[in-house]
Structure formats: structure tokens, C-alpha cells
Image 1 (cartoon, rainbow, N blue to C red):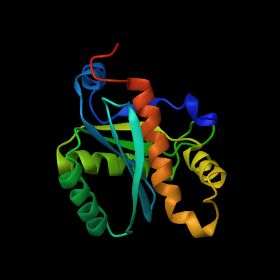
Image 2: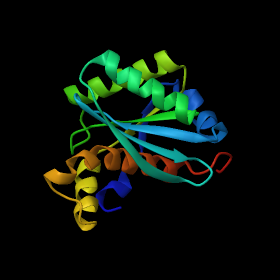
Image 3: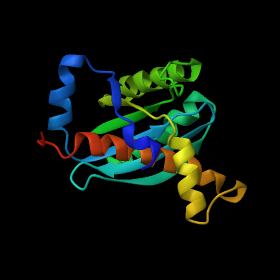
Image 4: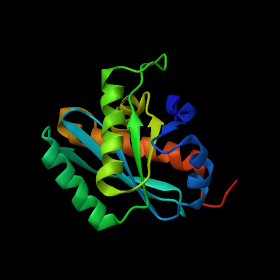
Length: 168
């Protein structure tokens, strides 16, 4: 992955002491979210295969509708972990959207009782656009694919960094 290869998990909603133990003990399905104020891209992956796949876009500004759609996905996929992309500036600084993404991560953890990891998502949307164009699916016609592909890129970076449960 071009520029995104340098993306690494930056923070967690868990206490820092839990980070290593958490990363090693979790096996199973992982759902990832590319947070936006209207659109939330969703990807699914597995710790065993270490492969992420785009899933869908949630198109909802209302909190209740957004979390209802997420609840359906959690019921269907039964994830052991949720990953949220943090939209930082290119310099790595937090912006208003970063704070909103962190709040979204805390809400996920509180509502669903699942651990949530936050991951640097700089350039994931740009990379998603590039991948879609290279696959002949760029432009407005395929804009709905951008968000889940960005979530896939974030999740793949997380899986590449943390590998399979029990791996060093």
C-alpha cells in the first residue's frame, strides 16, 4: 500500500497497559469503520486470515439510525474487536473530525461492550480512490464504494501490524 503502509495503530480506548495483551488474545472477526459525519464505511476481516474486505457504507447522519445499522452488523458478524480510523492531518495533528471519530469509538465501546482500537487513517480515502480508479471503478458512479474500501485499508493496516493472535 503506497503511503498508507506507514499507518500504525496510534491509540486505543482501553488503558495502555491492556494494549499488548488485548492485541495478542483476540481471535475472530473484526469490523472496521471509516468514520464520517454522514457516511461510515465498514469493512470486515479476520485475525486468522489477516485479510480485510470492504463491506458497506452506512448513510446516516442521525445517531440512532447509524447505531441501529451498526447493531445489525454486529449481530450478523459477531466481531471480537472494532477498529475506528482516526482522521488526522498530514502532520499527525488532531482536528475536529478526529475528536468526533474518538467520540464515535467511545460510543461503540459503550453501546456494544466490545474493545475498540483507533488507528491512524491518514491517506486511506486517497488510497481507496486510487485503488478504485485502477480497478476501473472510480468517479461519481462508484463513489459509494469509496468509504468501505477506505475502511478496508484501515483494517488491513491494523491486521498487518498486529498479525494473528498469539503472534509476537
